[in-house]
Amino acid sequence: MISRTTKQTVAKNTNNMNQQATVAPQQDAEVIIVGGGPVGMGLAIELGQRGVSVIVVERYAQPQPIPKGQNLTQRTMEHFHFWGAEKQLRAARTIPVEYGIGGLTAHGTLLGPYSYDWLQRDLVKPYYFTANERLPQYATEAVLRQRVAQLPSVQTLYGWETSTVAQDDAGVSVTIQQRGDGKAQRVLRGAYVVGSDGARSVVREQAGITHTRTDHDRMMVLLVFKSQGLHQLLERYPGKSYYNVLQPELKGYWKFLGRVDLGSTWFFHAPVPPGTTKDNFDFAAYLHEAVGAEFEVEFEHIGFWDLRFMLADSYRKGRVFIAGDAAHSHPPYGGYGVNSGLEDARNLGWKLAATLQGWGGERLLDSYDAERRPVFASTINDFIARSIETDKEFLDTHDPARDQAAFEAAWQARAQGAVGEVHAFEPHYEGSGIVWGSEGRASSAQGSHRFEARPGHHLAPATLPSGRNVFEELGPGFSLLVVGGDGAHAPSVQAFREAAAGMGLPLRLVDCGDGGEGTEPARYGAPLVLVRPDQFVAWTAPAGGPVVTAAQARDVLARVAG
Image (cartoon, rainbow, N blue to C red; front, top):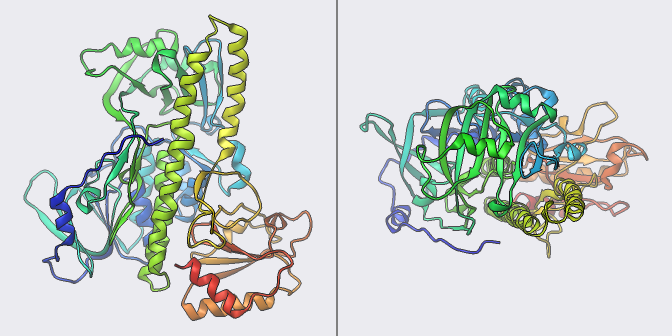
């Protein structure tokens, strides 16, 4: 649970936000994105494909070659499908496909007698349209940059960083300067600004958005190294890409090792004593102790970072939004970070576009915070922090040297729990005010995967009579799935068609066939399913329910469009 609050409000920056901008009122772009990592670039694609003019300000001319954010879930790969970059991303993979993104958890040492499979995301593949993927974040960034370069409405400014952000009633002004010379400076003007500029977000601070931290502070090391010998040692675990080592002295924190490619390059995260530097610690011995054997090591990078959870107290302040690590951060446990950030981009992107294009209301923009913050709070509390506490309790209670039989029984139970964690992680927006039937419900990362269409939940895939998947038929706006081809739903469909036309809301009709027993669309359990632009269900008609009237259709669409 979040236990210690750090309110970091910079008074002069808050004043900046309330001052009238002194630049000319004309816009350079509708949306200015500060930070061009995966989240910023994903948001730029989401907006650019919808015809929104965007400027991305990114401090680095090239992606930084530090392997992080490697595990991309099935849901994240759905984003890449809709962004027109899925094939390119899979082609950039650095590890053979047969290695998947599977992991392993070991006790004591990696080569010891106790281990089990961990985070088997393939278990939930039937509920998503695409398969998962694994590659270093810098390779993902390169693919996203290439896709952005194809969008005429998106402009990129590499090698620039942001110093100030000021908003007024009409828009936002962002002051940027070119890195290196300290002289070139520009002021950009937009309707909205999104800070995807990392855990030390300038945009967040300039907006005066406070944040809450937890008490899980630890000093961590990140090692990137070469070793053929380690690859040979770990050939006993075929198909594994990353490995966790549990040791009692770490109090539930992991030593976390993973492949960057197959056979030579690795990364390693682990807690280290306070005051550790590159020169006063034997990192090779630390690696050998975690693995349980000696092997040659050639270090390419030794860096340090602070392990902590952070959650912004709001994801929006007026015309300023934050996303990704600027809004939330956590240790690299379970591959939740980059995937959560990309979901932020997908959630916010269509809502900004809808507002700018006139068919989305103000409540639609507010729903970004209302949907995404509770999900990440749940991710922290119900999955990552709970995992640390559970591991600590297990290690304090069970020791194979003390009671081998009891340890082995508890270890087998943990292996089953690892399967349960994959099934339980199902982010949803049941409590969202723009989802039908949300009263009395709460949004969370904890749920259950089902084929049934449920308001606030991700739509499961289904093969249509044409042989195509429903995901191949969904439109860029809302989509109304019609299950049942006997014409009984024609009046309801017409009501939605006319209501959407009157509101200027984009709506695509998707014929899912007769919905007969045994067909995949029948699993939705509803004759009509309204799907949002981000593939979450907004509303369903009850089976056997009455015809939807024109007034009812308008009420539904007004709510889901905010």
